[in-house]
Length: 253
Image (cartoon, rainbow, N blue to C red):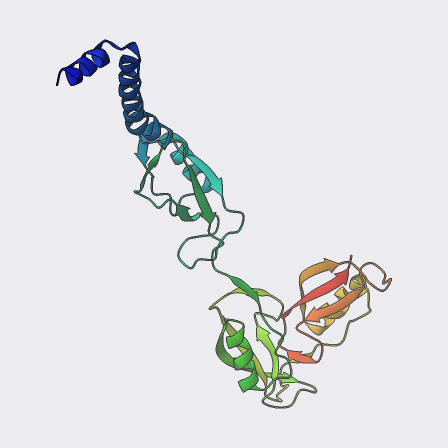
């Protein structure tokens, strides 16, 4: 018993023991400090936060200004997305979503709307009415009114052209009229083939036929054609057309 008391008395007086005790206490305090203060600090627990504003439907300039004012950064996603509700150029999608709480300074990613998707109207010339409807459906378009037309060589019941013309751009879901040959030429004029002629020499011919000049599209020639040479027309040659019809031309630039 006396020996035990002597050992305890020695431990109380020993500088080594005191040092060990101090180090143990210091380590406990340090661990508490790191766990409760440093780690949350590095994790951003104490960083200021804010509510992400609703940017859907805003212009690019308005969305960027709203994020700057709210204390966030912004970044536009390189590829937009088509939308039937949000006009082209407006904000369609944002991440994080509107109303979410996020750290100030965080980057909000924005996606622009491309508006309604556009497709090229297919060339239905020479197809049956059923084939034309299938082609339009595959293109995302709707077959509209069936119009009776006339043509020198296209048989009755076969597609002559579409309204708007093939090659034009239309929005998905738009209606396209289909002109079907009826073999009737009364009161209509045959559109001749102007391919290979120079556009300046065709104006007078068109006027005599009773037609008007429509849009003129210029493209780069591929076979050494003279500038101004007509490559194709819309409507295409062979159609019987009413007077004052506008004829569009594709010519060599």
